[in-house]
Image (cartoon, rainbow, N blue to C red; front, side, top):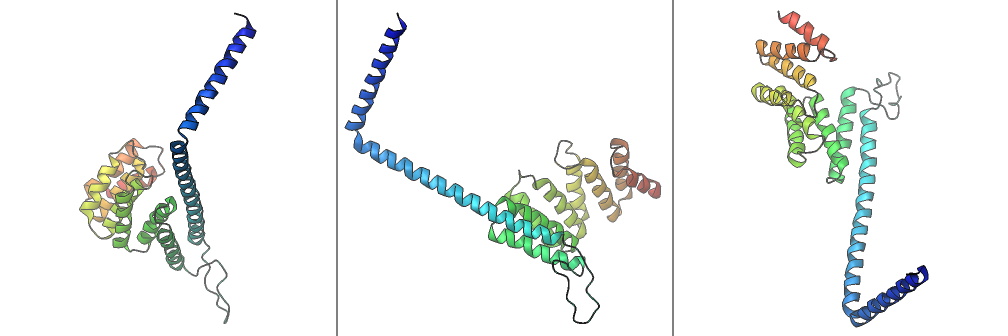
Length: 240
């Protein structure tokens, strides 16, 4: 078959197809309009939701950035000159800075509770609460992360935070149990050598010297390039 004939046949097939579709659309105009309208409504809703989510995430990210700026602001002793004011964007003590940052992170959570920024803010809040010695609040904050986002990047660190909070409340057995489980997770998100060091320190607080020595020894034996190795070896020497 010549190329011209093949081209002509294709043109005829295309014309026939167009005519068939046109006839079907004409006969089914009502249903098509309804279906098309429904599709347009769905597209409009989806597009609106996407824009709203983007706007919300952008706003949440901005608030998180403000909170982080406060958390990293300089600590400058209050002026000794009468009438002088604290320099802008500085804090007189680390505690004052921590309190201000905590309030800012909690504001992110309150304003945008379903955003990823809120989850990051909650993790930072837990860390600050530990620093401030508010262990009960820190534990509740970290428990919330594990409960609400168990598969998130923040969950493993939250479990570590729970153990630290329990240790701060002298619930040593619970803390040791959790840290032991975390140290056994070789493929987990947390560095095992860091978990072992926290486990060893917690065992020391609990008066479990032999368990502490075992954890320190694992750091020395299994993680020779770890930044914790020197400290672990010093602790072993000290404990005898």
